[in-house]
Amino acid sequence: MTKKEPTKVLRSKTNKQVVGGGYHRPVCPKCNCELHSHENGVGVVDMAKFGPYEIWNADLWKCPKCGIEVVGGFGKGPITRHFEDNFERIKSGYKHLITNNG
Image (cartoon, rainbow, N blue to C red):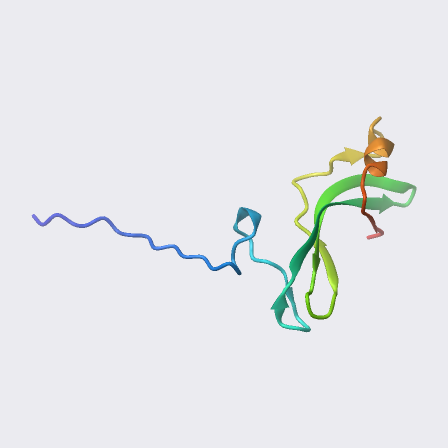
């Protein structure tokens, strides 16, 4: 009986494929290039019919050629909701706050 060599798994990643967690960077369809992380830790306020509902932490991406901006890289869940005591304090603590009207 011949001894088999273990199967080797080759993995290679380029800098285009590596963003936190192994995700591919967003791509600008107009310029055909990758967006660059412009600002990490922006706040996104999801709005409801009655007003602010919840706040998410996310990242702001920007195209280096045309300047279009996209928000992505959201956390696993909102960091606060409108009925929580810390809602206004957390909301006022963001340097950059983006409103999502749905």
